[in-house]
Image (tube, rainbow, N blue to C red; front, top):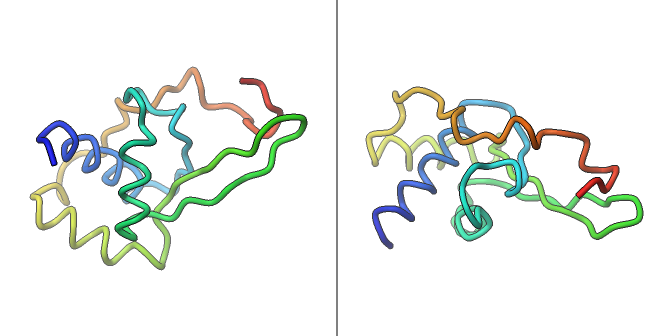
Length: 104
């Protein structure tokens, strides 16, 4: 895994660990964020669920919950990220909207 790939995974995980946000790849200012969200899900560090959308394809939201919290904490701690500030800078606030309307 490249340093940039690990950095993006840790940044996303830290954001989700510190908040109760449920985010999509398009809500992140990280190019092709699914390439980082999918491995986090496969490693059972986050949960991703499919959400249906009117008149469009469903989308997935990712989050940390009670099933993944302990493992996420251990992963962040092992990489020295547990006590870093929450990386809100990676959120695309202009894109946070009601995606269920299919406005993409």
